[in-house]
Amino acid sequence: MSRAPLRLDEPTLARAVRVLARAEPRFAHIVKRHGSPPLWPREPGFQTLVLLMLEQQVSLAQGRAMYERIANATGTPTPANVARLGESGLRALGVTRQKSSYLAALAVQVEDKTVDLAALATLSDVDADAALDALRGVGPWTAQCYLLFALRRADVFPAADLALLEAVRDLWKLRARPSPDALARRSRSWRPHRAVAARLLWHHYLSERGRS
Image (cartoon, rainbow, N blue to C red; front, side):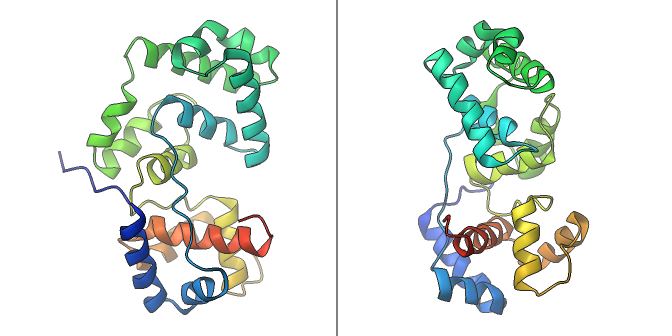
């Protein structure tokens, strides 16, 4: 098994931003116009994975609002507390039937140590992504964003993210958003800093909308 990659921090983020800005004029434009992107770290573990699962396929604001309902109902959305809430309790808070099933099952698995989220930090990007994808309710976007924000992996890129697709459409002056496959191919030239490229693109998207 390959050694787990190093985590991004502020110094490595800054170095990667400089490399990408030298290689791609559009990234240089983002830095000149809006400054360097934030690291946007999230704490590794159950609560971050729950939030990402709630954010999947809805707006981030909707996902965050649902997470706050769970937090208010449980005090702290630990695996034990969410397991006690159960699928019916999650449904009563307005979580969809499907996501309630996924979250309740994940809470039980993490609580009884069938799933060890802490162990993901020791795995390579490929192995950690596969381990997350194997969990019910965790799709590619959720897995990749967990690697990017919680584990701070440097070369992960969620190519299906709508904000990334829109940022590329805007910066490259495309008539329509690229497909996720097309964006994934484009991102190959940003290796081994694709997670930093994603941060630059999100920074552009949010800053242009006054939300960064």
